[in-house]
Length: 165
Ligand code: DLZ
Image 1 (tube, rainbow, N blue to C red):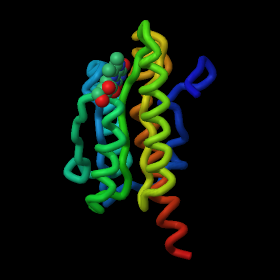
Image 2 (image 1 turned 180 degrees about the vertical axis):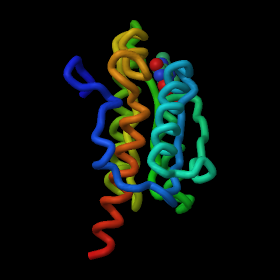
Image 3 (image 1 turned 180 degrees about the horizontal axis):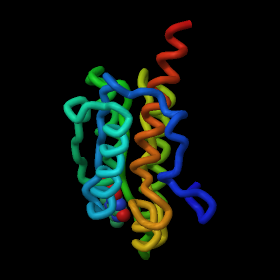
Image 4 (image 1 turned 120 degrees about the vertical axis):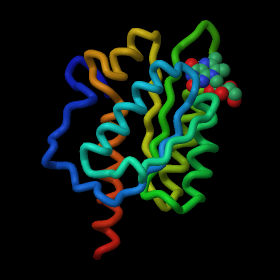
């Protein structure tokens, strides 16, 4: 959890496997695009920093976070990627809609993560307000996009290590 104790962009560089040759699909929600755009920038920059070629990163947008499930599922079916990163931002409003979108999207991505042959990384920010979102997309709590990129690389490597056994 991002908190005053944990910056989303902090990690031990040496603990991250070399990502050269990894192919990563990224699905990004258009809702709150200032935030999701910053998350995407963080994810791409971190993937590249660890060796992923820009040509091996495929980005596609969906209208809202709820569509991340369908978008990620289609990318999984393509069998062209080693991991998928789903990026979205849901900000609490006046109605219970927030809870339904957060729960539905989270459950859908969790199901995919369990059932897909490749890792599906959960890059959904769920915040009470825009300030909390900005703090987590490059603000004082780092960038969740960085965290997602590192997680994707580590999970691809996790699968490769198992497959070697
Ligand atoms: C409808 C809606 C609302 C109210 N809020 C958000 C939000 O904060 N973040 C987000 O990513 N998407 C939101 N959406 C759109 C839904 O995710 C979805 O696109 C629509 O309900 C259509 O399925």
